[in-house]
View 1 (spheres, one colour):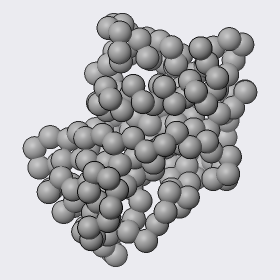
View 2 (view 1 turned 60 degrees about the vertical axis):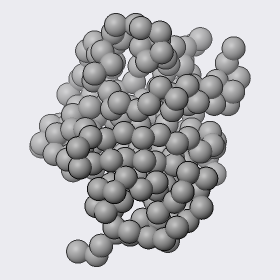
View 3 (view 1 turned 120 degrees about the vertical axis):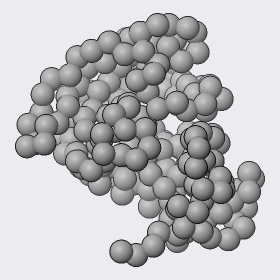
Length: 209
């Protein structure tokens, strides 16, 4: 199996060299990632889509996370990140259909896993429900959506729970309805500063007050 090399960056994004993914996370080096958030407008509400991470994942198994995301390899640009949308979700979206929300740094992890990302963040917005998901089983176990305002309240304003709706995929490929209440512990713990900037940029892009 070919070793994946990532660019090692400083906080300003200047490339300092390359290292394997394992080494990058073990040493806590800054590196580039691609984040694609998907939203849907229905009447006067905006819904935010999340993937349910597979229980097989080494980090953050069975938690809700960014709709589609992944590392950018040393020889890739942000445009190459669109492959994550097709690989993880089975959606044939062109990079030109995405709106850039800028670069948002964030740090996370624990123990021997230290994650310092300069995330190239993008938005894919639909006026109708997003359909046609075909999930990469090793990575993604389901898809849900929730009200954007309620998720913002959950993250920033002390809301206790919200409702998520979508589907979970069984091992045989059958999709079963997923309707549940979730608290903040059900989501991958991105930093508050990441979410502040994300919500700000989504509102600017969608011209929300």
